[in-house]
Every structure is written in C-alpha cells, then in structure tokens.
Length: 362
Image (tube, rainbow, N blue to C red; front, side, top):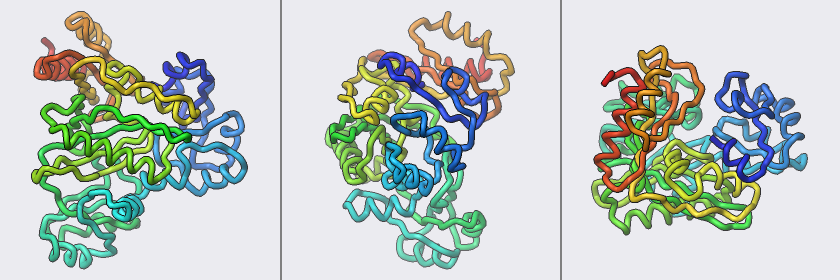
C-alpha cells in the first residue's frame, strides 16, 4: 500500500521481506528476502537505502541502534519505536508526560495482580509487554486463579484497569524531522475478538472537544517521543466523557487505511513524506464520511467471482486485496466507500465484506 505513493512521489522504494510471497514482495521489484531480526541481513539491506523505516514494530531495537551508530538513517528511531514495542515502557513514559491512560502496574506474579485488583477492583486486564497484537497477549481476568496464563510467556506483564468505554477511537498523525505535523480526523474503530473489523471516519457523533483532545494527545505523544513518520494512537472513549490512550503503533495503521480513498493525502504517502523530511500533505477528508471494513478470511476458496460481483453491484466501492492466502480470521483485504449517509455506507461496506468472505451469496 506504500508502493503507489512511492511511485507518485518518484521515490525508489525497496522492501526487506521475510518471504517471497509476502504482500509487498509480490508487487515491489526491489525486494530482498531476508530476516529482519538478523543484524547482518539488516545491515546489508540498509546499505541500499537512504532511509530505513518499518511496517511493523518487531525489528530488534538493539540492531537499529547499531545501524544508527554506523550512520544509517532510521525513522522512527529505536528510542521512539521502543514505546510501540514494549507496553510497560510506553505506559511509564506517557504517565510521566501527563497523558491520560488507564490505571496500570507492572506485575510479576498472580499475587501482584490480586494486590492491584484490591485497589481498583476486578476484573483486571493483563497484557504481555512485548509481542502482542490483534488481541493476542491480552487477557481479562476476574481472580488471581485466572491470572496464571499470562506469566507463562516468560515476559513482563502489565496489569491495567478494565475501562468502561462507549467505543474505541484512533487518532492518526504524521510528523517530520523538521517538526511539521498533521492530524487526520479521529475515527471510530470497531473491534471483534481483538481484531479491527470496521473503521468510520470521522467517528460519528464524537463531540468536537473530544475529537480535538484526541488529536492533541496524539500530536503531543509524537512530539514527546520525537516520533518521525505515522503514529496511530488507539484510544477509549470512556463512559465518563474523556479519552484514554490504549495502544500506540509507529507505522501506517489499519485504522488509517481509509485514507487511501478517503483523504487528500493517504497515511502511506504522508509516512514517506515524513521519513524523507518532505513537506507533509493535507490530511483532510474528501467526503463527509468514509467507512472501511476489513475482509477476514472465511470459507470461500476462490474469491475472484465474489470480487467481480461486488465491483459490478456497487461501482462506488473500492476493494483492496492483499495477495495473502485465505484462511479463517486472517486479514486478506478491505473495502472502502465514501459519502454523506453513514448508515448507508456501513451497509454497503459490510455487505461487500460479507460477500467476499462467503458469508452471503446475494
């Protein structure tokens, strides 16, 4: 999804992929198949680039520091990226900066969880500090007896209060080394089983003061961490009428995919502009609302007939396919539609995603 933006900007874009059939490797000619966790592979790839950036947070920060010391331009840098890699470090830094977050504590054993719950009440959310995504590495526990599983991973565990919230939001911003920053409209993010299934931009009915506060928080975090590139701040719209930070992602994010079709400048183009220290593009929406629905793999083995059907049924629909093998629950694509009637847009996008999954055939 970054390659079209690179083409339009006249940027030679190269990819280090873990396998030849990775989504980007299928369409980017300058692809190196290697291991991003191996320093020698990273060093060899970085030697071909002016700037090194990321589409996930799992590159070892110690390797990135070595590359920086050797003169490689790494954006975002490892000192910023670690806050998306380690939830414990992230919570401590945000709390120090006065960013509103759920009450939390690092815990070492179930007894620590019980002590934390004695102060804030059960249930408690437990998260492995590293490695979790799409709901993995997250547990809601209601007693110390149920708090054993998270510690088996052998990594530190973060305990948090279970926040009562109306819905989940995401504030996506981009920031350049020069310090220029732009903020996209705050979106509503619908999660199911820990996986984002739907995004509505902007979040319908979100009070202006909360939307501005969410953008302010995201821009503040980007500045505090000296973030360069796209930053997605996932938030809770709490029932008491405020927003709290849930997670950070320092890369183009699923909650910003709507910008490909629904914004003046996509998050992918602004990420490239930011890491290359080019002037950033307008984040303004092109329509009153844009709805994006993720297509999760289902039981439909051949999606091509469904693909054609959706295109013919709704010419205003945009379908993005990732070139991934279809398996149940895997994100294999998304659909986007824009207009002024959010309920109609939701119906259209959900219908197309359901048809592409094989859930319906009409």
